Length: 446
Image 1 (cartoon, rainbow, N blue to C red):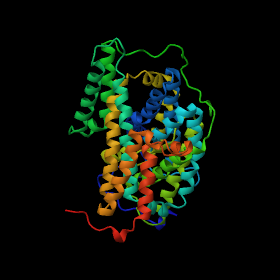
Image 2: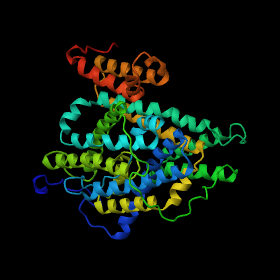
Image 3: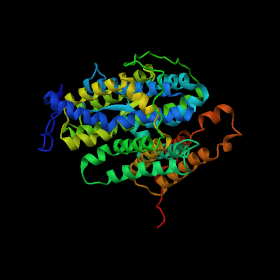
């Protein structure tokens, strides 16, 4: 019963609390803002994956549509709750950037069947962890989590740079692609530092639109292929098939562990902004139900031919900006995302996004992921022990990323498991955090 943990009184800045009723018009307007704030974050992972694996425009468009549909369905589960699943908050879900490296690795080995199969097979990890949240936080301390998130961002930056380096075609003037990427990046940064709140929220979308406009005006924007003319995408569960390889299990498991920690932080932030309890039985029930939904929604996304989902933190900023925490707005977010996914025109135009436009945006986004890792590390007391863990973990992770030949003496399975910066550095951080005694930490030299 919710009466055991009564919510704190809502301050004037919160216009609509979690249970407050809203008019359909206002709820739709707030829902549209949330959907647009997360739109680019949802479609970027499938676009990055498609470019890395050189998938066709038709398949790319389908993956974008399914990512939007899966995010809409996942948001509905998280907001509405289904039995014990879902936090019941205005907590929205989208495709996770954290899985990009293991997904691309799986795609290079076995294509879409292996990518989707691994996502589906390891999704229960998060469901099980939802029962043991307090123990999970003891293992993934800020030092370990910060190192892993930092490595995620740093390992993805070269992917963005490769999109820029691909240019606008062999017949384009030298430096044209770089110029477009710099323009897109400049617009995004300028709007991020602008004073009006709406500018920060719409920065990435506006930068992309300007990039599209410049490419179209210079004849460098190819229209979507005419092969697909249907007005509605019909989802086909497991359309590409499923596959599994044991040597890829550990990288996916590690990211699912980290995702559970991130979801706990996102839901706690949403509760704070919603003026709901952040301690007591109700708080822990909501956390557990939210992490359980995170895992089940990742499985749902895989069945929809998409990739793992997680809670999006940027929408908490919109709750603060709009003063609306009502779950009614969440229903509109879910409905709008499903609509975007079911109409293939959205996916087809995203599939032909010029590489420098995508690269300019993702260079900023991946840099922000790395910066988020730095922010997590700041939560820890970085004494000599912690600095040693961070230094060695980053060195191992980036060393493997930059010079993969260092793993050649190892068996093929070990090379596969440790072949990404995230896995190698993350496992190093976990091992050092467990083995180095805190009593012997000493002090950092001044």
